[in-house]
Image (cartoon, rainbow, N blue to C red; front, side, top):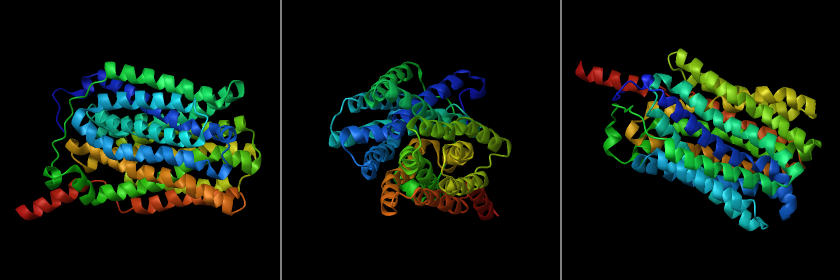
Length: 412
């Protein structure tokens, strides 16, 4: 890696990280607002419980499509513009959803929200990677990805209160307006950094899509993340409704449980990223351990049946649900060249998010088919991170070692 000047001496890099984190936090709040609001929106729009997952699925369809294409745009036009368009577009769509009275229109708007929100992720990864050296990326990505956890905390703390005092419409209008303001701030202040990768690949002259498809480790990482996201966002989407309808938990209490679940990710992600940096940038084994623990805790959570037990289990579940994310995100820049990093980040996240698209429907179907079985729904969620743990075993987190060995053999 080279740079025009030592990025470690540039204090602006921390401001760039904070702004990318703010953008990711707001798109995460926008996404997470659905969970605590879903029951009330369903009642207001006349949507049965088993069909509520369609709203989340439409959101994630837009989100996946956006990730698949926005990474390419990030490499072409830069991260600042994409982040700003993402926030302003998602915020405006949130406000539109807050005014809807039709379930069909609401589902369509959710897809548009996802389409705009998904453009932020790859842009943020590209910008942060341009300001932080590879040996610092675990820490930087830990801070950045803590935004998804904080978004869940904010939504599950604020939305039940806003609904109780006003209505679910107010929560969408409020967070939409804040997202628009954040988008304007990012456009005014953000700029790319000086760090550029010298890493070259034989596939660099080919298309970015071909590089992704021929990169075995990147594909395995994408599949492992699919399994992790299946559990993480399946729980976020369905946990409030499952606790309220499955065990009669008060909506505000259910929101508090999910907020605690997510709060551990806010602190756990930067911590595990920092620890991984200290241990020679290890990513694979820690990710396997976290995914395995997450799968076990989902099954344990399914065995519980009262609010106190849920509150006790939520922190441990949250650590597993979120702490693998900075590890797999920080692996992406290690597996590809910087010229296609935006595309690779967007496309891997698109594959990860397909888990988020499918799991709401899968859990809804299982919940309905098993006569509202809380345990069956949680086992369905646990299958994702368990498979992800197994796939992660086959990822080589330092492919450059193989390339060096092959080159040395040829020279010998």
